[in-house]
Amino acid sequence: MNLLRTYRPSGRVIFMTVFFIFICMGVRAQSDSTKRPSLGEHVFTPVTYSNLPFTNTYFSTLTGLGQTLNLTHQIDLPDNIQLGGLSGEVTFMDMGFAYQQRVRDWLAAYISLNVSARLGTQLQSILTQGFSTISSVDIGWHIRLAKGNKFALSTIVELQNNQGSIISIMGFIRDIINDHPNPEITRNVPVLAAVTGLRFAYGLNDLVGFKVSSDLAYGETYTPGKNGFAFSGSAGIDLDFYPRYSLPVGFVLNYSTTSMPDFVFVDGKQAQIIRGKIAYTKASDFSLGIEFSFMKVPMVNMDKPPSVSSVALTARYYF
Image: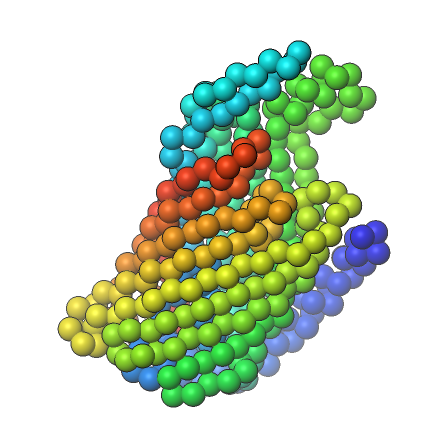
């Protein structure tokens, strides 16, 4: 653990240096064929937390907003006094950017930046949940393993650097009551992890496509001094109505489960996500859509993951 933290800065420098070398190589390797990815006759639409097995060059953005549904809290007071059944919602805000550069037909380098915030909006939720943010920077390589007329399989090798910031008002109050020598209202936790994974897609026909992806991470956790594994898996169906019906609309339905530290604050817990996306599919070089999600997301001081609904605007431009 200490060795990992000691060498983390130099590791970032080396990783960034190699990444920008790949960028320079990729500029020369770029061709006019790197547009929206397709297999067989099917053109795929990207969706969050369901990665595609393509090494196309692109730039993507995401802006999302969500809120818990009928959330109730329990506040633990001194002398074993508990106040339960207190309602108060938590707002979710997400913003992300990603850039992938094709280096060779079978290889791409990428970098992504994501920021997620969870904010109590009422007194009860502010006291129990406080304010939490995660900023994540991912740098990696995307490697194509196999490709046929209708299918593609790839893998990734990635370094993920997360910074969790948690403002806990109740924790601060407890520290003061218990005469803690250094009460803290804010806790910052760096989480560094190495990630690998697989992406698979299959184009059945011009209307229907399928995709599956998975990731496995190992590294630091939000519990100081503890390392562990995290996992994510996703599967979905992709529909494009434009080729067959001249209707420039696509629809994606996707299910994901994840315990990755860039999304889940609580160690050892998993989030469940059902996501639907409506996208504009007529353009050959960009994808624009709205994603609607229903999630079960683990939160601190909660025995069961609360329900969250969210909406996000996403865009991806292919070069």
